[in-house]
Structures are given as C-alpha cells and as structure tokens.
Length: 567
Image 1: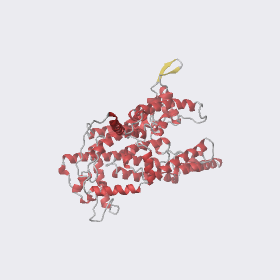
Image 2 (image 1 turned 180 degrees about the vertical axis):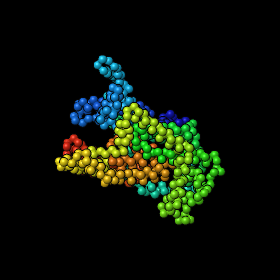
Image 3 (image 1 turned 90 degrees about the vertical axis):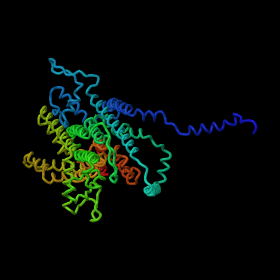
C-alpha cells in the first residue's frame, strides 16, 4: 500500500483500454474502394465487358451459337454507315429510331471521296465499339446521378426530421413495439450475421454495380444515352433544392437554390422534349411534371402573398385555391387530402357530378394557368416538334413514319416479357392461315390481308390494354405527382411496361432507374413484398429457361414462356 503500483500491475488496464478503444471493426480496403470510387469502378467494369465479351462470344470462342451483342446495335452501326455514305439511315431495314442517333454514331467515320467512291478510315474507336463506348459512359453517368440524388434525399430528410412531441411519443412507441413483434426471428438472426452495407455502397449497388444495366449497355442498347439520361436530369431539375412538406404540416414551405423555378421549368421542358423525340414513352410524364411545377410555384406564392389564402386547409395542402372564392364546394378537394366529414363525404366525390366538374376546373386552372407549368409544356412540345421537323426535313416522310408513328401501332409476335405476346402470336398465325386460304381461293392478297389483320374486332381488342394504363396515369399524375413526383413517375412507368403489348429487357431499365429514388417509400421487409420478389425471381428464371429451349433448342415451349410472363 505504501509503494506505488508497478508498471506490470498497470499493464492489464492499458490492454483493456486498447481493446475497448479499437473494438469497432474497420472496413476492408476493397469495400472502401468500392464506396469511394464507385463511378470509376463501374465505368471500368462496363468498358472491360464491352470489349471482352463480344470478342469471346460473337467470334465463337465461348458458347458457340450464342451472340452477346444486341441485334439493335448492328442496326445502329449500319444506319451510321448509311449516313456516312450520304444516304438516309432509314435505308437500313428495321431502323425505327431518331436519325440523330445514327448521325451521332457516325462521328468516328472519316469519309473521303476518291475515284472509287468512299473510303473509310477508322479512328481509335471504330463503329464496332464507338457506340457501346458512348452507351457505357452514359450509363455510368446515370448511376452517378442516381447516387447523387439519393444523397440529397438523405440530407434533406435528416435536416427536416424533428423531435416528436410528447403526445406523439407514446403512439410511436406502440407502433414500434407492434412492428417488432411482427418481425420474424429468423430474419433478425440473418441481419445479425450479415453486416449492413454503408449508404454509399447501397447507392452504387442500385445502378453502378447492378448487373442488369451493365449487361444492357455493354450489349449495345442505347437506352441510357437516348432516354434514361434526359429523364434523370429532368427529375434532378424538378426536385432541385425542393423541401418536402407533409400534407398535414402547417409550416410554411421554404425553397433555397440558385435556379429559379421558371428557369428550371424551361430547362426541364427542353430535356423532356428531347426524351419524347428519342423515345416516345416519356410523354406519359408530362402531366405529372406540370402538376409538380404548379404546386411548387403556388407554394412560392403562398410564402410571399398570404392574403390570397382563402382557407387554412388550402395552405396546409400547399395549393392556392382561386376557385374556392366562387365555389365553396372546393372545400372537399381530394387532391389536397381535404374532406368534409360534416356532410359525410370523404375522398373523391364519385356520386356528385358537380363536385367532379369543379375539381376538373380546378386542375385545369392549376395546370394551364400557372406560368411554370405552361412554360414547361410549351418548351417540351416545341422541342419535340422542332426535332421531328428537322428529321422530316433532312430524311423525308419516312423519318416520321418509322421514327414516331410506327410505335403507336407496333405489334411484335415474337416471344417477349409481355403478357399479350402469345395472343398476338396466335392471332398472327390465324391471320396468315386465312390469308393463304384466300390466295388459294383466288382472293387478292391485299384484300385478304385487310379482312384478317385489320378487322374492327382486332383493333378494339388491341386498345383494351390501354384502359388500366390510363386509369393509373390519371391517378398518379394528379394525386401523387404534386407531392412525390419520383414515386409517381415510377408507378406510371411500371404500369406502362407491365401492360404494354411489347416488353423487352431494355424496358425494365425505364423504371429501374427511378426505383432507387423512391426506395425509401417502399416496405421492402413486408411479407407481401418478400412474396412478390420471390415470384419475380422464379418467373425470371422460368422465362429464361423456357426461352432458351424455344429459341436455341427449338422446343415448342410457347405456353411455358407465356405463363412465366404472366407470373
């Protein structure tokens, strides 16, 4: 007790301190590299696969008979060579895209006129790889934009979170306890064994390290360059510095940023017009983007001129109700999450035609009498019309027919992921049989084709799949897009692809690029979601196996492919 403690006696304490100090596991170097340099790694992987896999599979060195490069890429390169020769890209059969894509891919062709005609000198990137090189870069940029938007969402959600009040704490505790009881113990054990990845790694896994986009862009699909990149930039501009306000919040919305809302509307309109010209399907986003800009501008007006507010409920919904001064019936507007419990009415006024007409008038005022939404509409339609006019001016009417009008009546009888392809296949077979009978009986081929293929019954049945798409499009455009535009665009694209008459693997990227931006609004651990994902994996495996037996082995497995598509 008199002598001080020896250093040996203090040694165990230092050991325990060191063990407690370094108790947290450190990240592995490879994981840190994947997180910090995700864009460079994702682009490098794409470029390596772009060069290696076609040389192995297309040249027959690996899996003879199975080609890696997409057939559409051959169409692109052939159309580019036609443009380099001074001809129309539509001289290439089945080229049904914008002519500016072929013009862009013809840049590396150095054509010179000599005595024998045109002689081509390939640059460092020939046409065999130049298009894929551009597609891979565009796809990697799409992944970078997705990761950047997800980081902004986390930053805005963390800044908007507030401490719950004392009255809300007991309710939240009860809900948390009920959710914890419902969770499965097996899932908890699995979560304890598997370490949770960091947020940066999850952002990269959504697209940059996703094998589906990597496969599609390295095979030569132009989706990332033509449509996904303009769509993602459009979403970024609409949601730029936008602060989310819940429907029941009484706080005044606040917007901070360098770009005014009307300038963002103009830039978004130009990009949206380019996307519509390149690929027709983004036209379904028009009303949703107009509704989002209308609500943003009316929220800005509410912050500056509060005298125009006619109702506290209207201010909570973030809308400026000009019609409510004349029509008090608008107090029951469903889109602002308002209801009139005194009259026993909630939600959409299905049984009251006057309220429906008033609601339609209100939305016409919001969409077409708000300057930002009108600017977006004019510039998007103007850009699309201008690019289409240039196409027709340089390449004739065929550019309008093949590049735009063809997609309104496209019907593909070959096997694909659509649930309607088998019906189309059977109808095409019956039409060809009837046509052969008519030709044998002496009837003209053109007359027989008109009677069989273009009957009014077939035309009416062909428009039936549009009904669920229109219903979902209207609900999401006016009911969801003003408050959560990304979720609305995802729902619209998913419904469009699911009910489309033609669905290929490229179509999946149309909504997969939007899924990471609204993933936090989806209950991934619910039983219904787990069951749906299980069915999805089983159906994909079944479809690929059945399609392989149909296309490669020549088996008659059409029904198996169709059942996998339905599943």
